[in-house]
Length: 319
Image 1 (cartoon, helix red, strand yellow):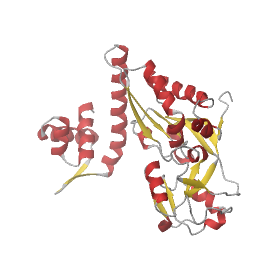
Image 2 (cartoon, one colour):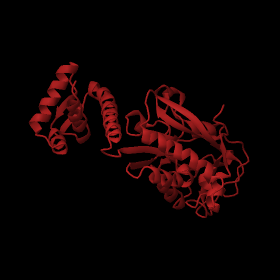
Image 3 (cartoon, helix red, strand yellow):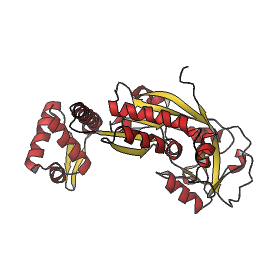
Image 4 (cartoon, helix red, strand yellow):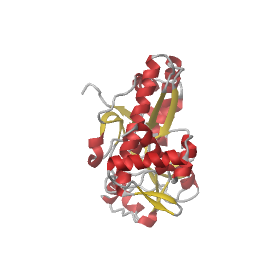
């Protein structure tokens, strides 16, 4: 199984046709077609079904795609690290961070990392949910966010870093702004930033314990924090939010926390990596910069940062 064959396979899967994949790779369509035929001969299974409008992955193709992406990401990462050692390039570090971390810890960590390694390209992503596709397929080096649910935990290694409380929030002037019981929220509409499935039912489980049932028509989804804010400001939707984010300049004055008296679970924020993976020297340095910046945030000269971090408990890493 050749690396070039895998690159052709992944490109065709992502582009939907051999011609588009060939243009993307700078190859002829004939070369891409030959590469796929060789790969199918090696795997002894058809990887695509040919359709009038392009190609579609077969079941075997879908299974191979996940492995191929991971293999290519690991190869690219190895090549970058060798080039770093040889002084040819600074390489890249790709990370994911949960929204409250992006508003507190990330700026200081980026500043220090760029001071130490100005030659390294950074790619920072918003880490939403806990299924972590970017870690699974090798796109991300590591993330700081929710640990994976138990059903998926075999794929990842996580270390708890922080704990904080959760709040129910809505727009300023929300009709239920003075509500103190979760039970009173039954029947409301919600916006969530992570889609719940069999592996991930954190919010519905918490609300269900207090008699709040979420039907499909009541739950809407946003793929970023900014979009979720816009959706709440323009409606009476509610969401579940970590307290540091409630206190952030991003939300303060735009959204309010309902004075709920019912006990709600804590959110645990962890450093998450793919099991069996080894961080590059640059990625390891970035992780260390994140932890140093987290400690510095507790004594930040910025009142907003201190206010956000006052609701965060550091997990004792010596445990």
